Image (cartoon, rainbow, N blue to C red; front, top):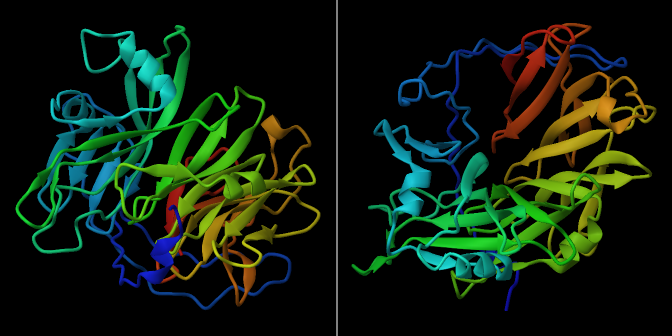
Length: 372
């Protein structure tokens, strides 16, 4: 039985931030809202990922133990070790593969090897959890990774699927458990799927698409009793047709965006709640458009919303975006921008309510990074 069993678990999370030198900036005053009192500057130490020469990557996700995923690589910041994830997965003869029906057909068409010809692993949108890291010694070398891979189907059509990778680990009793690759597949009627977020229990959120014509938010739930079983939450997707999910916390709360009267609105989904789907609205009613990007253990959400009206053409939205933070106590709060004509967008929030993201001094300017 698949259920939201993780709501019964209580844990303490310690969030780690690794970044370039940054300074806190108070938000601008928007629509008569006073800026909060100034905070002292905060300085971070710059650490460069020790990549092979000529490699250029962008970090995509990090867990609470400083393990960073960037495209096809994993960086253990504690030991400064780099792991080529694609090579690790493709060359693991003991890897347990749990394929979808579509992937099974592709594997059958390649009897000479484990993987279908032409497959490409992609980690650009990868994220990593704390699986096996919260005990001493850790059960696994690093956390579970949610990402996407593309391959040619048996019919010769390219497609992309979300997957979850669990590294080789101990069961705590001295027995080694082989690494596992679960192809999360695609919901019926859709063409591809993409993973965007994962929590410590292995639940994953993302979206499914059919070409450029639409998307649906997707939640894959880990079976409480069988680590090889991950199932779609059909109730979640039914509530979020024309939406995308980007983040899930350890209590199963999800954020992303959904369509409301043709405009994108950030949402928060709380399982087991009598009214699980909450529309977080927009910063200013005349300016439709908001997008939830991350959610912390308290259910606070950060993301981006427009403060000037964008063009009606969805693909040419020239409105002015501002980062926001949403809390139950204060609702959606505008974090402003570095200058009165600038823009900002938020990407992550930790359990202390600290927000990180990007900002431009004016539209088109080189982005800076901020901590709020």
